[in-house]
Structures are given as structure tokens and as C-alpha cells.
Image (cartoon, rainbow over all chains, first blue to last red; front, side):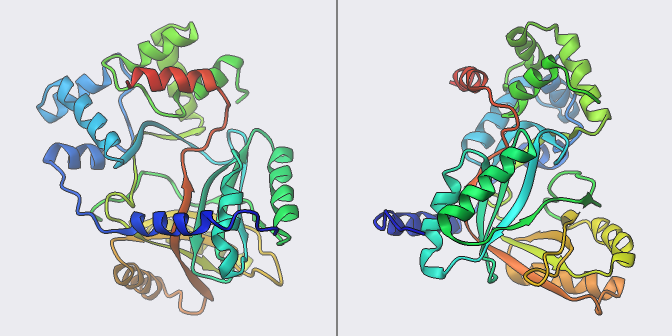
Length: 174
Length: 172
């Protein structure tokens, strides 16, 4: 890959390290409960937050404020749907084996695609893993081809063939 | 199920999350020119057919202290794949359990699962327990811990800049 922007590298490394700093998370009982009990089966009714409030013995405004706070603190990404892979649009997991010195720069290039929604390092000779999502398979393939062309690295394409897992949410405190 | 134009608009409107207001479905309905009842009914249907896997709080596990994330990949004989896949999927601490293609000679593994924990030691102990408990010692596997996270956001299946802007404004 033609490395055009060496300066960006150090900044990103620092940002990556910052993300790993251990910050203890203090959670109230209501926060723990919302995180644990409402990852699925969110009420489909006129006033869902009011229903949750009644279930937990608090007022509706407190439920809404608590969820807003969890979101602002970056502890939840959203309250909403999780779509089944392959059912809406097209997507694939993919991996690259990147020389260590080039990893940050190649990662930034991969992240620059709007179609890449997740991109992360793993400890393996295939050290960069990412998910490409688009409206159809042709578009997904175009992104993979563009990444292979620009980086000069062969892309390992690993689309989902079958899911054994029933998503019940993330197992907190398990 | 064939998605209608309205379904796609609905997916675009909710893929970034429900607005945190007292009547979120009514708020979405008003935006799309539907009734609140239609939005709720449509969302129920999308869940029933499995297009929406679940609806609720989507946690950021790293921010919550679950920093050790191992993708465990297995080279399972094709005839054993279903049995092993279902065993792994049934484990409480396994999130995701997928069959993916082998890419020989570069990549031999055809079953992927994810185990999260607060630190590596606990993840590896869980994995050992799972292997011992289910007698998986003879299946070649590899553990890939995650490192730096370069990008993570909800997938955008349907583009709708307008919708995203509206939601941002409603959150202040």
C-alpha cells in the first residue's frame, strides 16, 4: 500500500491506548437492571418507558433520563433493534494479514469506507478483521476489491453461512 | 417476507435507535406518515419473521468493562458441525456461533464463536471448561483475542441522512 500519511499513525496509536485505560464503571441498581433485563423484549406499546417504570417501581422520566445518561456515558449504543445478519442487505466478515508496521494505516484506510461498520485488530497472522455491510452482495464485493487493490493484500472473505446462535443479548455478570 | 417501501423507511428510521421520548413509536410514525399502531404492528412482524433478532438496550460491552474478547475458531468435520455448533451456542457466555467457509490453504476454520470476559484469564478458563465439559479436545481450534478497535458502529443497512439528522436533533 502506498503510505501517504505517516503522521496520522502516532495519534491513532495513542487514541487506541486511551480506549484501553481501565475506568471503573459505577452503576446504580436501576442502571444495572436496565442493562441486564431489557436487552430483548423491549415493550411494543404506546408508552414503553412507562411500562418499564411500572415494572421497576420508578417513574417514567427516571427510566428515560437513565437511558439517556447511559447513552451519553457511552455504555449503551442505542435502545432499538438488532437486525439478523443476511436478512437486511448483504454483509461479510473479512480479514487481512497486514505487516505490523503498516497496521494502523491500513486500518484507517479500511475504516474510511462508509460500508465498513466494524474494524478491529486481532492477535493472529490475520491481524485486521472487519465487517462490510451494504445493500447488496455486488456492492460488498466492490468494497472488498477496492481494499485488496489499494493495499495489495489478499482479502480473506468469510461470509456467514449458518448461525447456531440465538441472540438473547450480551451476557452481563454471567 | 418481501419488504415494502414503508418497511425500508421504518428500518432506516429505527436502525440508529428509538428516540428516548415518552411515545417513541408515535414519534417515528409521525416522521413516516404512518399511524402509531402501524409502526408497532410492523415492528412486531419484523421480529416474528426474524428479521429483527431482538429489540432493546444495545450495550457497549467494552465500556462496561468486558475488555477481553476472544474469537474462538474451530476446524470441525463437516459431519460434526451441527452438533458442535449447537453445543457452543448453548453456552451462556458464548455470544455468536457461526459457520463460515474454509479458505484452504490460508484458513482451515469453519466454526466461529465469541467469548467475552473482564480479562483474558477468565475467558481462557471458560474456554477450557467448555472444551472439557463437551469433550471437544480433539477439535483443532485457535483463540484470537481482540486488540485495538479501529471502528465500531451499528450497521447502516438503509441510507437515510435525513432520518439520522432528525434523530440527532431530537436528542439535543
